[in-house]
Length: 359
Length: 129
Image 1: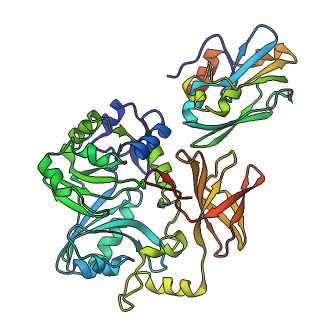
Image 2: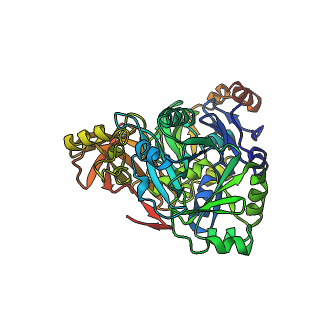
Image 3: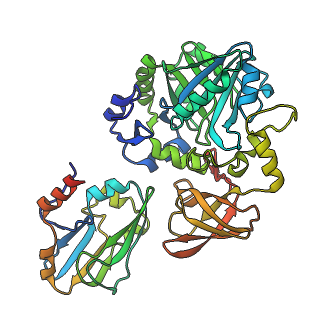
């Protein structure tokens, strides 16, 4: 048996098909993952993301530590609660994990990292924290829900008080705020408006029940994957891992090379790679029948590449994918599918935002 | 446990076969199979008039999760395909033994049916999984 989030029984009660996800028993879907996908694009859905790992970093050297540990620069975060997408790299520039870091003050931060990489992440954080005056604290007393979709703001008002809502009303994207017992952030993994809500574990089920009562659709890992892929967001272990640098995974924007005197783990390797040139992650679109899948071979102007994530896009009605390919690309490529070469379009990775096609 | 109608025959590759009593046989995939595949997004069917041999891969059920070959459970000629699935592949999920049928074969030799599994035997193969 795998680990269970505090909502395990609630998932089963809601009719979830449970699957193993890196050692966690998680809901794949509650009937139809396509219907769950549409609920998030058109209305509002809720995901249990309590399997993700929350690590608080506090201490006089918290900022200095994270400026060394992370590829993006936390010194860019000036306002309380501001969030940043970033990654932890090894000395070769390979991605140990991608994560979101929240800035409370220069001596207090919160990181939300992946569950699949939890043990390795924690060991790496511990090891590097030893040289700094900081404490790290895994918050396994907390669970987390992601409330996502165009109607998320309306739905959250049905489960928190008017005073509480006033605190987050009009909050910009990528900001988090402590509201009573909840930490509410305008972040997500779907390309829709919404919130990620960190909740004390013993209050998680009651919040979940209230959201379902407010006609929010429970959504599983299946819909989470098609939503994030449509939004052009990477999945750790699939679109990048320890052997892949952020530059090859469309994450170059989240690496802060300036200021040039900031030393961060992996910096030298990335600078060398930048000079040498490297593969990149592109988007593929196939409007003909069929579904692009992880692992399929791609032939493109500069040579051969591979699909890292592919799916049927429920919003668009055809298949989209992300592929790692040589840097020189034209407008089209060919994908080997069931022993046939099938033509596809090459686009930027990112297909749907706020319910609309961006192709 | 998934629904396995007693009046049908089954292949171990999760196709079901219904004897229409006029030498033709309707074929689809079982409830268990559609559940394993998840939401169907495309169904690629053979052409009417195709001659098929037992065990040929003649159709593809493509779901959000995977593309899965569908094999001819008997030899013969394809005499009908379910064109409704073009626009609503989800019917295979919603009604796998009814409106979600895939194609009909006019059997070359209907004694071939004896090689297929009955409901109990098919269920036993699922228990082994």
